Each structure stands twice: as C-alpha cells, then as structure tokens.
Image (cartoon, rainbow, N blue to C red; front, side, top):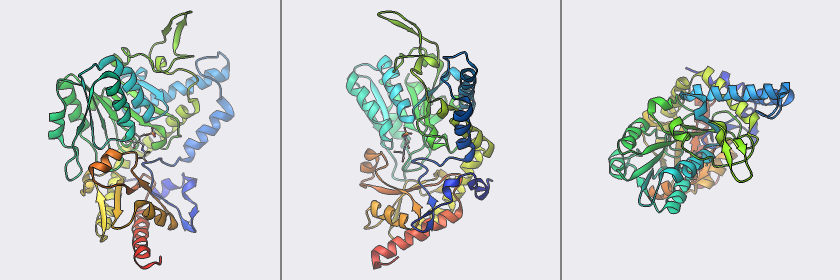
Length: 411
Ligand SMILES: Cc1ncc(COP(=O)(O)O)c(CN[C@@H](CS)C(=O)O)c1O
C-alpha cells in the first residue's frame, strides 16, 4: 500500500493551480512527472561530474563513465536482463522499436515472410513494421481485438504461422489500458520460429517486468514515462540476437578500428551507441529506477488497480459516457479512454482543463485502433503513483460539470 499523499510531496510541479483550480495531472500515459530525487540527480551530475563517457582518462570523465555504466546495471536489474550488454540506451521506445525493425528486420525478414502486430498498437509499433514489410516485400498482419477490449488470442493463433518472422505487441495498450498476455505470445511466436518484440512503454513504469520470465526477444521502453527525463529509453535484446545485428547509427565510440574504406565495431552494448550518448538522461533513468524500486512496482500496480476500481464504476455510472477497453478493473491499468455523447473529446479535455484537470484528447497515436473501434477520437485519463482518490473525484466532478455546461451552458 503506497502513501500517494506523501509521495506527492516529491513532485513540486503537482502543487500549482491551473485556471484557478489545483492541478489534477491525469496524462501520465503521455509523460510522467519527475520527483525531486531525479531532478536533483540531473543537477548534481551537471554541477559536479559532467564529462564525456568512455573517452577520457581525467577524473570527471572517469566519474561520468562510472555513473553511466552503473545506470545501465540498474536498468539490467530492473527488467532482469541476463547481462548489461543486453541493455542498450536509446532515445526512447520509438527509437528502440525502429532499431529492431531496421537492424533485426533487415537481417531476418525476406520477401514472402510475415510480420504480425495487433490493431491496438501505437504508431511507433506500426510504422516501422510497415516500412520493413514494404522494404522487404513481406506481409504485415494484424491480430484482432475482442468486443470487450482484449487481444483476441484465437486470432493470434491464426495470424502467427510458420511464415511469421517477427511478432511485435504492446505489453499494455496506451488507449485500452489492457495488459496483453506477453508470455503466451512469446511461446506462440517461438513455436513458429518467430521472435517476439515487446513495446513496454506503458508497462515498465507500472508493474514488475522480467524479460527472462516472459522470454521476450526484444523489449522497448522510455524513461520519461517512468519518472525519468525525455530523450532516454532502453532497448533490451537477447545477446544472441544483438550479436548478429548491424548497428543502425555509425560514428564515434561504437568502433574498434576505422580504416580508410571499412571499420570494425565495438562489442555490445557500445556497438549500438554511436556518438555522445544522453549521459545525464541515462544517469537520471537510473535515479528514476531507484525511486520506483523503493516504492515497489507491485505496490504501484496495486495502487493504480485500486484507483481504477474506485473511478471506473463512477465513470460508467455517468449517463452518456462511454469507456473504451475492458470494463473490469482487474484487467485495467491506470489508462481510461472515454467519451461523452455528443461532445468532441477536444471539447471535453478543454472543459476539464478549465477545471484544472489535465487529460489527453485525440487519437493517442493509435489511429488504426480508433478506426477499429469506430470512434474518431477519445478523451483519456491516465493515473500514476502520485494520483489519489481525491484526483479521481475531481475528474468525476469535472466531467459532470462539463456535461452540465454543454447541456445547459453553465459550469
Ligand atoms: C504504447 C506506446 N508505445 C510507444 C510510445 C512512444 O513512446 P516515446 O517515448 O514517444 O518514444 C508510446 C507513447 N505514447 C504517448 C505519446 S503518443 C501517449 O500519449 O500515449 C506508447 O504509449
């Protein structure tokens, strides 16, 4: 059981007013806020240790390199990778997925092969595969979604065949909030000789993830969704796959020898880390991992489940409000997409903002999903570890006020 009111004290940004109302930040699926511990770590690094990594023998360079690689070990332990060489620092989930599609995809996919994703994917886990399929003359196939918002595993068994080379699925949907059966999908993909790529952007911040237990071949996530800064993320990959893969970017640091007409690469993980990395971002994601680990990922998941169990029935009780995704809180993470009848979600979100409540509105970079749901756009509230039942009550009150305003013209 976490004490969200106590935890909130570490997030100065949450104590501000928006439109003369106390801020209620419910857009955590877009990006999360940063605790003092992470902000202080960033400041300390730049005030005391800033230097380039793996390139200098002077004291600051040694210190910066040590902190950078210690952060990598924290990432390894956080997702239970076998070794640090399997955890690559990237710009974020989008970059991580693009690297897999480019480097592993170009290696493993040929004309006539199949790539399988699902209708609930984020654009970052759709377009790289569209590009790969087009580049290689492969076929991109989609796993259906059940009427109650779950990944349709019968459809998965039909779509994943011996022609499948790559299956790439979100661990958690950024719209439906549903948790997908990743370990089961890994077994299914492996039974057909395919690899499983996991888009973990909405999972790693919210629940324990053990990449060895689920047997993911690749796993991608972003620092800014887990109390870390923007511009830093992680690509996990099994060593036996990463060792076969060519780097996607080329330049300093990632080389052994540069000859006039060819070059050789450094060993993992540095083979994939060309140029000066986001050193401060990596060190800060390490601080974010310390922060989350101290609270406990199971406890965070439980807290969000309690908030969803508290707010979902209240949302469903509002006449004219539709919630997309499973209606059972047990299968829901803190992401709740909803619409009010007759209102464009942008109007809903703007009205909620007038009440100090921050939610997202639009297609959430999941246009194929919204088309599949036959809805052009939704509003979306997404909870995190620092949200409380009082925040949930403010959301409900703001929605009712919005309804009132658009029906009778006064809030
Ligand atoms: C499931 C999923 N997969 C990939 C991404 C991309 O993460 P980046 O850190 O931007 O690279 C996101 C980020 N979704 C944000 C911004 S569109 C949202 O509001 O839902 C995601 O939710």
